[in-house]
Image (cartoon, rainbow, N blue to C red; front, side):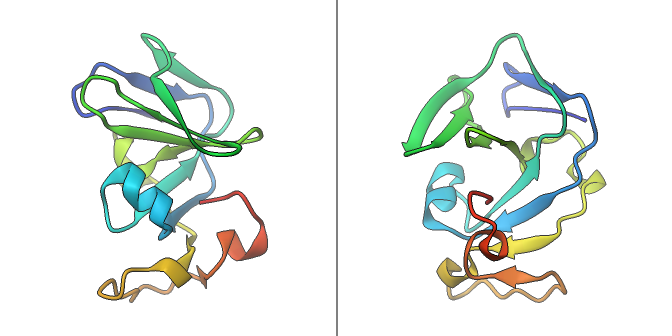
Length: 131
């Protein structure tokens, strides 16, 4: 799968098709993306950046977020063990099936969740560290 930022300065390719995606309702992800909630896809296999890895910001202990230094597009949420790319940065986000909503205890009051996906008030049903 491939993706990139709004201006096209940063492109990426994942070596395998991801099998986990979620919508995160936490305040940090809202701030990082500028959206009422954020979609994330677990980067499967190796992620290759072109021409180079984007700028980075340590948003909290153990969490790194990458973004385009030109247009500001949010591109990743990373822990020591795992990288998630933003769903909206994929070239074909419609090819990904989202599994759940996380941090729903922080959901904005006017966001109604009307799909049939599981909703977890904490990170991914207690698995920790996953948006």
